[in-house]
Amino acid sequence: MAARLNQIGVPAQAFDSWDVGILTNSNFGDAKLLPTHESAIKNAFSRIDPDVVAVVTGFIGHDPNGKITTLGRGGSDLTATAIGAACGLDEIQVWKDVDGILSSDPRMVPNAVPVKTVSYEEASELAYFGAQVLHPIAMQPAMKGNVPVRVKNSYNPSAEGTVISHMDKPDRLVTAITCKRGVKLMDIQSTQMMGAYGFLATVFGDFEKHRLSVDVLASSEVSVSLTLDKKQDMNQINAVCKELAPYADVTLKEERAILTLIADVERSSDVLATVFRVFSSQDIRVEMMSQGASKVNISFVLKDKCLEDAVLNLHKCFFEDQCVVEPFKKSEDNASPPLIRAP
Image 1 (cartoon, rainbow, N blue to C red):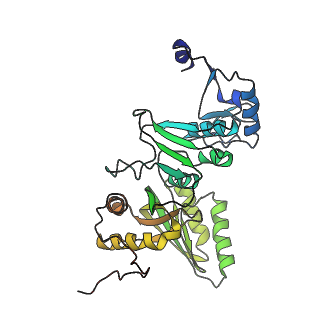
Image 2 (spheres, rainbow, N blue to C red; image 1 turned 120 degrees about the vertical axis):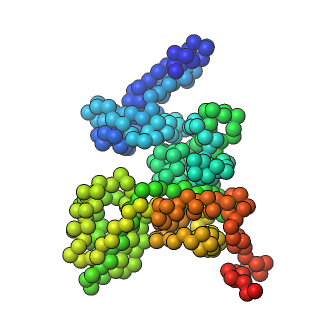
């Protein structure tokens, strides 16, 4: 790339990422940036001629011992946002093969549309819950430095793309619909008379012991429902089930999916009123629901075989004005209308 830029008259120089401050821990395959990376990047770029385009390798870094590490899926996005934020740029651009962040996965929803603006929090949740556009932690440097990120399409450069930045209260009910397939749903019911604190502490102590991380969680004083994605080791899942057996009944259900709405959670009642009417009309059963602490996502756990129908029908309601039910609307006096009208 640097050679081609020089060839067409644009001064450029190639750099390995560690030469410009991309320093990580030693967790090869999923390395994390060290706290010192920001100052290292600033120092490195202070020595680079500002009139020369720096072409930096993404995805890789150096650990404290000088060994090469990799940042995992989407590590090039994280490289770009880390450099852009440390240098205090006006905008970071990430070039992909779609016209920005879309309202849903176009492979599942042919009528998915680009979303012009999203917040850092919305982009992070989209990435975590299955959107393939950005790395789950790529937004963190940009968010910390308050640097907007624009997602553009390298096959359609004239498209406006999506700008990710700090945003005030959104003027839309739902920003996007995303999903994760191949997850497992675990229901844990206490069989002993222990308080909520003791029960939950014991459950998550066992999960920590076996290095199992949870995607979505719903709990009460004596029960917990949670999901585990397909990356989790089945041997470790079986081991934690054995650990839980003396004090809880455990049920593990496979072939489940998480459907997540990136939405204005302050208006969650309006969102859910439409969602559950759609699910009821399509005979789709929700096995678990969780509203995230981030206040921008509402997640549902369904059977995997129901996922596509659920996503397609919700997308029609929130983005295509073709809802299979009458969308929920409050009456003029703000009183909620009945969901079932008398004949």
